[in-house]
Length: 254
Image 1 (tube, rainbow, N blue to C red):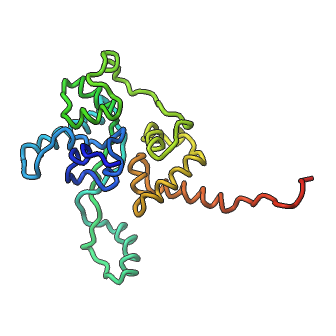
Image 2 (image 1 turned 90 degrees about the horizontal axis):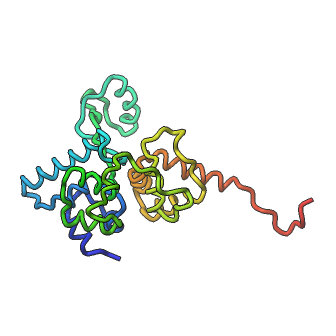
Image 3 (image 1 turned 30 degrees about the vertical axis):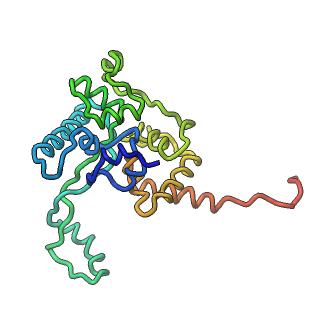
């Protein structure tokens, strides 16, 4: 069901896509999206936009120094530079296939801008420690996420990241799957829990329902790569195709 308050909160901001309208008040949002909720302003409001950008940077910097718990949830490349000879050698066959002449004018991405996702409770703890007051839409997000404001003294005093609160058995749908996997985002490969068949089935249905770009989108949400999502789906698909059919009408096994 559409939530009018959510539509008012996100407005026409480019930080919210079509899928965000379909999933209002998620348990975690990117720092850019949080900044939009905290600083509502018009596109021509220079001071408001500057304050929003500064607040988003404060969130990112706090994640970097460990004072705010956040998960890396993807990134985008900004700017461009000239390709090195090695890069040009790799690109040249593709250019030839496309019928384009190779040349030194070819450029490649120069740097990446990382996106971080923050849970409502972690943001509330950080804001109270910073003596910041949540704006109306951030306060509403806290309410929807079941986070009381202001937090109790015990919650604010605990600066260490909370332990994982979701187990594999708690995963019932795409939303809880994303929340479960985000708990381990950024850890070493050997620290990642194994993907259960039931989890992959949920992921497959979610990617299918999302449509074009589904693998990249769920990779962004779970803090992994689209290639990893593709490997999971393809591996499970091949395994199911290779599984033998049960014997039917052949009597009991010896």
